[in-house]
Amino acid sequence: MMRNPNSLTFTGFMDGVKRRNKGQTEFHQAVAEWAHDVIPFVNENPHYQDHNLSERMTEPDRVIMFRVTWLDDDGRIRVNKGYRVQQSNAIGPYKGGLRFHPSVSLSVLKFLAFEQVFKNSLTGLPMGGAKGGSNFNPKGKSDGEIMRFCHAFMCELYRHIGPFTDVPAGDIGVGGREISYLFGQYKRLTNQFTGVLTGKGLSFGGSEIRVEATGYGTIYFMEDMLRHQKQDIEGKTCLVSGSGNVAIYATEKLIQHGAKPVTLSDSSGFIHDPDGITKKKLKWVKNLKEVRYGRISEYADEFGCEFYPGQRPWSVPCDLAFPCATQNEVNGEEAATLVKNGCIGVAEGANMGSDNDAIAVFRKAKILYGPPKAANAGGVAVSGLEMAQNSMRMSWTRKELNDHLGEIMKGIHERCVEYGSEKGGYVDYVRGANIAGFKKVADALISFGAV
Ligand code: NDP
Image 1: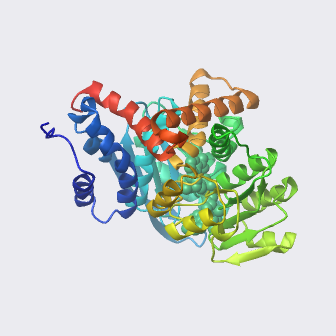
Image 2 (image 1 turned 120 degrees about the vertical axis):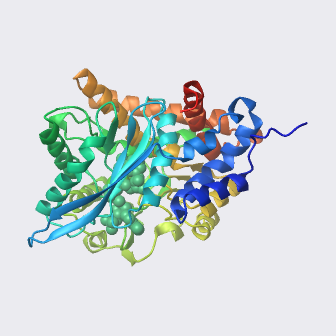
Image 3 (image 1 turned 180 degrees about the vertical axis):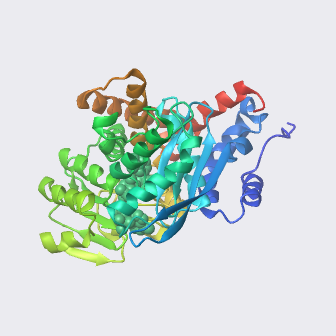
């Protein structure tokens, strides 16, 4: 049979990606994970071969970079970099979070925006993909400095966003306080009250369950994977990394559903509480992280357990693991330790929590592995529902939204099973999520012609 001139090899495709995006290692990593499944799928399906979809999807529609100038408490003028990567609006307005962290670079935001396109597609809601942020470090800044930075950031961002154009949300370093400052400034600059950001406060257009949605959704996804194997989460010992928004609400749902979370972490190390993190202890953590902006090491002093400085929790024996902090926080060696210690499932609250070596270990061991595109899509899904409520000028109840979230996570699970099932009953959720997420965006691009 003649080879289709438009068929690609993984290596040839990745060489092109690396040549066009020099030095952007996180972006290369995210594309490689996707291309590993998508390139063979495209080659096997003539319908998708002739539209140069892989190259179109890996080139952002637009990258906006700008200077953010603000005044610190000592009256000094400070400068940071601001970004918005608008990756694709093929299936809806650009949608994705803002990250404020010193590690933010164009490569990190391009990987996040790329992932976001397929994650949003998987939710079944009409949302495109984007990501933005700044290398601003919120740690140690006063409330006034955070406010002035957010206002300065919005002074440029506001011209590039809108309820039908691009709807940012939170991510690392951007929670309810920052979204409020950003929204206040947008409103002042445009004289418009619209649903231009999600994750807003409940008194000005926010949605119930949005704060909890990513963490809760990650646990719902794990429960869907377990149920598919006729197991459940009750009584399982669980490792959670991070102690921010996603980690806290993943831990809350684990406790509610009878599992036993035993670790939390931050960038200084992790705590191991073999007795289990209880509802009461978690309430203390919420106050520590959401009100006092303190360090997780204080938990060890408060509740009399060990703190392991500079380490990650993956060597603690467990049944289930939930990376919920940041990218590349589980490597191949740590993944092998998890599997050796009897871990039967991993679901990613964080984006790219596991690196590609770790993913290969999980796939080879055939344990349950919920990739970020699928497992942490609950946050953006409820953001989509916040947009719907804003457009309709109404609010749904907490129960209605929690039910919607559960249904959306089930739908994502079903799509992964549809495209990721293998002989013998094993579900390759990475492949399932990659193919299902790709198909919807691909079909839209083909309909548009050469745009
Ligand atoms: P937060 O800022 O609320 O919390 C981040 C947590 O990760 C903190 O505990 C932080 O510790 C820790 N952390 C950050 N960088 C590092 C590092 N280099 N090493 C170790 N720990 C680190 O962010 P979120 O909880 O919102 O986000 C966590 C992850 O979930 C990210 O990957 C994000 O992209 C992803 N995600 C978030 C969604 C959301 O709705 N918020 C939606 C989907 C995915 P410290 O305080 O010491 O920095």
